[in-house]
Length: 458
Ligand code: ADP
Ligand code: MG
Image (cartoon, rainbow, N blue to C red):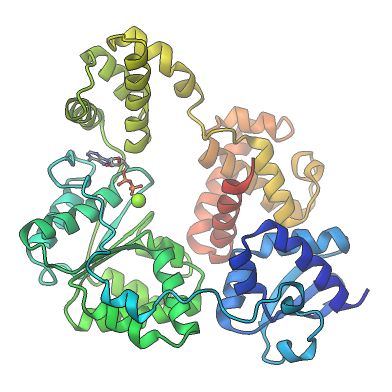
């Protein structure tokens, strides 16, 4: 089979597993440049395609090629200017007749509509944000920014785990400012959306319009910037936009699931920019804060619930606030249907199931094993069973690590699932990986990627 035939077959399969727009955007004008000893090099037209293929689509590429060529070991991408012309018949255009890039995001018309597009959800306000030890610094910083736009903390960087109130706080700043001055130009956007728009504007040569659009903003809120990790080219462009806005004294507020220094492969310039302003974290709320949040929510939504039932929920749902709200909603909805008052017994009977498992829906250790084996190209038996080969040792530790972080399995439980190993092995594995992630960027990226893959399984 020639490289062209191999790639064409692989593309046929990849096309089925990702969205059409993504397929067209990222796989267009790509080709296999070399295939030696199971190491395949793919030529791509530019840095963006390289990043996206390597970060987001690698697992699809590996899987597709491996179905055809079993000895596949690695896939890497290089920027190659000659790919489009070298094989007109088998380029992606031959598979999907797509000549134009997908619809440009920044049409002039869209820019003039700005102002109607802050993306703020009015339900997120400082008034309904409950303050406790876990979030008081972050709340104070956000509030201060809303009263002194662009003047005191710039940028403001809020970080913490999922469901702990970052988006709520960020949007509260915007809503507060609108309250003071409804004419303010505010933009809330996730980093993924922002970078997609940015890339699109570069592709369609509308970067000046893009900049112009953002130049008119008083407050730019970018949520979840950890997604910039690993996308060098994107980061570079982001850095320029960032500096540009910063110099114009525009207020920038960012959030992330971890501190700037812990975001793997964040470009140094960007990291020091992020660190140049104010950084505050949100952490898991303590018991009193959880109670206060439940009470506030129950009263604002007219849910009648006994104190004991609130205590039961606060005692048992401790991970994050989103889950806390979810639990309250769940009992409230059922109670309404069955016309019950919510007391402790009722809450217990309804929630015992989610509380005892406390896991993400449907995800179990088999999914983790599968995703890891696909990614590292090893057999599940080799991963799980006693096998001292060095190549499986690390993936095995990662498997145990993810069982802990993603499924909250106990250490003995993890040992059991991983070929009846001792719980101390599981502890060691967890600690080892937990520590390595800090220094080994490649590993941190792999793990991010595996986590993403876990969102797709089921
Ligand atoms: P994150 O962005 O950190 O993942 P969110 O801001 O989306 O978390 O918060 C999850 C849910 O919990 C939202 O519905 C939010 O309104 C609510 N929430 C978070 N923190 C608080 C708080 N301190 N007081 C009241 N509600 C909160
Ligand atoms: Mg959020």
